[in-house]
Image 1 (cartoon, rainbow, N blue to C red):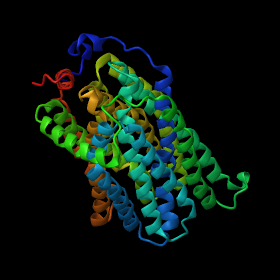
Image 2 (cartoon, rainbow, N blue to C red):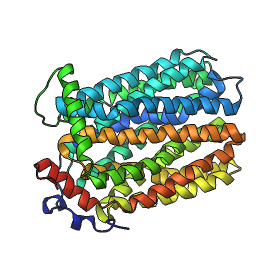
Image 3 (tube, one colour):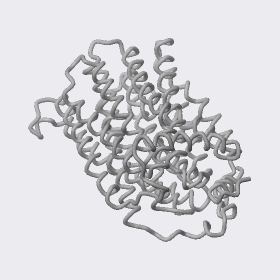
Image 4 (cartoon, rainbow, N blue to C red):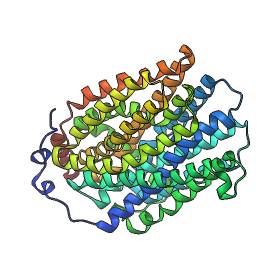
Length: 446
């Protein structure tokens, strides 16, 4: 695997050293992942698919509700696709990464909490609020990811990126566990029904996200920039910078190769994350078992994400990503044949072992091959492609279920994405990408 072993030999001398630790900033940055992962677990992967199918879409055909859920995921991602690079460029030009994060986090927090008041059968309103929340979650991650370069450098980026995902699994898992217990035993919490418990879980996810976002805004520094212009000036400067970056992309060939590979394999990862519970429900598995399996994924993911961070530092991020892609390929094939809830638990455990590793090492590898002074803009492209993948994946799986009438066959639609993504990743040389990015920062170009 080209460039996957002993990566330190490919990096400039200064970057082979461990960067000085900014422990307070690292923890504050990672705690945002602890907070916003409540949306990813409790809402996106857990209760929203269940409640959407069984409460807000009560009486609808399962294949139709699967299509509606896939469409909601895809439309929210499409909105981000259209805006992400410009938003990142504006943040870089106006020193507004933290302001951008605050705006999108607030959008997601308010949208998530508002789900509590949506009545039964109103699937259209539920889908609209979910799309708003998902846009806030994904849009905020553009600015959150770019702030990684404010707290870590060199090889330590792999560890800090993994720390974020690891704390995300733990924080999201703890709240999700509490919400699952609350749903299974609503009377113990003074609630009338499981439905009321699920509605309350949306509020709890909103508050969890808000509270654990605070340390980042207090202790993570805004990267230095040229100025702090107003909104109009930021928009004009952002357009100018975006145009300049698009011209530079021809020289950043490693970035382009990586983004192509990432677009393919993360499509499969995101699709499985978003549609796994819906898939299990369509196979006739109980919602309680599926939510318990999702909870297992969270707690397996906590230590394994840290382990993948160590793999990235020792053998290079590509090695860890390849391990994850291979596991996801096996999971996709295995998912087609499962017939029992026990087999779904096995599938969930395997996903938990590799999911955070693929995501964290992709983020840290990308951070090393982009210009640091344009980090928000480049992470705009990164998240744009990640969410454009999420436009294709869920709707592809939903259409496959609708056309074939078999949710089981629909899961095979994502298999080709892992295979093609792994092939393209082989040609990504992170050492060359690092050198090209640093030459653009210094203005020497190649």
